[in-house]
Length: 322
Image (cartoon, rainbow, N blue to C red; front, side, top):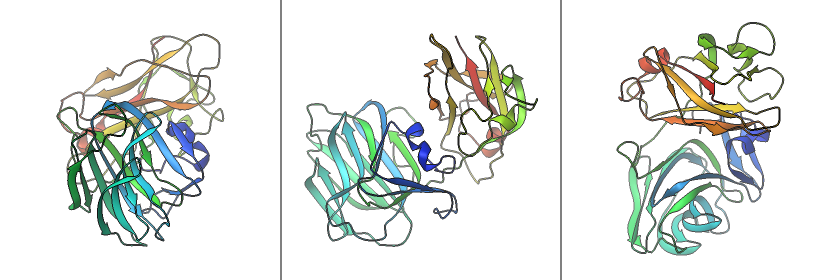
């Protein structure tokens, strides 16, 4: 998450649950983009599939050492904590199992951005590792399983007054890509900037499709594209990206809702190499949400890692399935 594409009021649209006070700042992040800071009892929660191994990375900054055993990252099983990376009272990091200290690491600096990563395998004989700016600063093994299940399915960021987050990634240990530490990452938000090949949906006003969905933060029913016809496709060009090297992955998010009774299904759509690639169909709710959230670890046209060239040539959008 870059936090460059959402306002504070919209955090609940992006995350499965939010608590306490969080503030999204539009500037002042690690690379001059947006970031999120945690206030009283502030946290963000995202639901995933059951997996034993999780890797979480984030640019992180803290202004003062918290007085208690506060969570930076937590892997959870439902509503129960499994294993956490925390700040200790003196500013040192700790690995804990539902608050019980497993290991203690070094003191981390105040008032500066750095990139922190936490990898943990949930097990009675689990393993854990913490890296700062790519260097291991704490690792070991022990009981990382608090519940009866040797997995986690929710990732939590933050705790009361527990600093500021930017350029966040979450990976599990499955598959052949993005299943380990990714290192210091930059997460960049890109928005539609030109009409694309598939233009079946209807504009709420005017004729240019992309201008109705290029908002930095969702604007609800102010302007939008709509369709009631199953099979309608919509893809648009997006702002170019200029980076050196490969791209770890592309995430397509679309804020959508349905406006009538009955069920509606939609799917993410990527057009690459002159071919449309459709994601799994998901149910659309009555309230705007990022229901369409599709991860493309590779370019579907080639099966290879994305490059700036292949991303810039692709189009992204949505299909109304039913």
